[in-house]
Length: 123
Image (cartoon, rainbow, N blue to C red):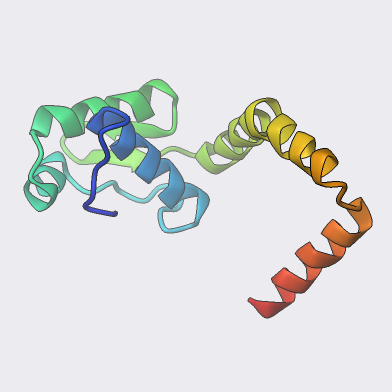
């Protein structure tokens, strides 16, 4: 996790978003444990209650589950649920702005697809 926090969003929300990114990127898989609240709080010098609030947000979304005496673990099906919600959010909030810019710049969709394929080959 990135130790830098920005002022645009509460830290607990940024922490939640970082765990979501780790799940989407495959750093955390279903069934994997999350780092303990104490460890995260100490490592990033934040209040343990802030960490707990971020973890609670993940639990409220059924992305992690609490196992009594063992900690928090990535829930089964978390990746599938996250991809679905992230795709929906992208299509509703980000894509309209991107599509508008594509139109405004007069970009050809076929050229964009070719560019995407070329970029993917470089990785």
